[in-house]
Image 1 (tube, rainbow, N blue to C red):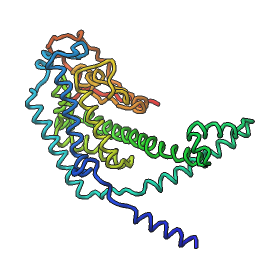
Image 2 (image 1 turned 90 degrees about the horizontal axis):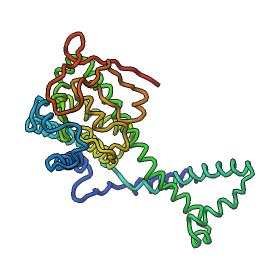
Image 3 (image 1 turned 180 degrees about the horizontal axis):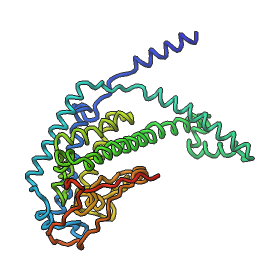
Image 4 (image 1 turned 180 degrees about the vertical axis):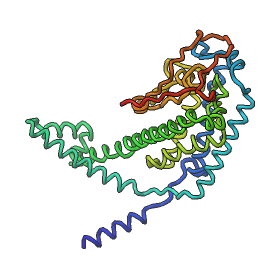
Length: 353
């Protein structure tokens, strides 16, 4: 009999599943996921371009326009062509991968919420047992909590405990778990990029063939943050995204949030503006000034980790090469330190706990 009940319940559950309706009809969620990073990239870049062209917040600029023209080995039009090429390739690859992806389903949320409510109930009972063993009046505490959270009407009906459990389950299911998945995705992506980028700076052929293109911008600007070699962009950016999404189990809509944040962060890190407070930098340990050192000929030739975990685990050190002059508009180039082959700057990677 129990088996029959379980089979019936399972059958009803599967019949309740249906394709998830699009977030913005008639655009499918997958199509929207390809549009979001491009829109966020150019929207964020447009803000910084408005600042620059109108002379706003000049006190927060890291370099002057004169330094940009003197130090960069490519012009803005060439950079624009490179960025558009990267975005076309990445979007095209996304379209191809979309043909192999499954349609996301909905209808299982109610079942999952019930499961989480039962888990939280068990956790709460365990916590109350421990508190009561310490001499605390658990009955009075739970009564006060139930009355304040659920309200007098629900409390009087005797459904206060169920209401609190379901409210907590929704907080975990719709808030805490997605936040943890997004953080894990950020960590996985940063790990992927860290080691790929380390290899590019440690190998002369990889640096000259692929990564040197990105360093043609010594004075960066926002939309040039994804000015990469097309092949590098597929391995570095697309590879990091795939590893992050699969490794963390992000849903399609969660992956939109992740790609939107990554696009905004790339623009912000390369914007050339360091504001005392920037909402995009709240979740990471680096800002535009920190990343600017990476693009300078005298600076660190290694990628800064974006998470506190990587900041502690992968401390990145170089031979001490202090900036030989105060930061002014002096456009004179400074020779960079090179390795024994004279190709790429020397790196000393130190792993610390």
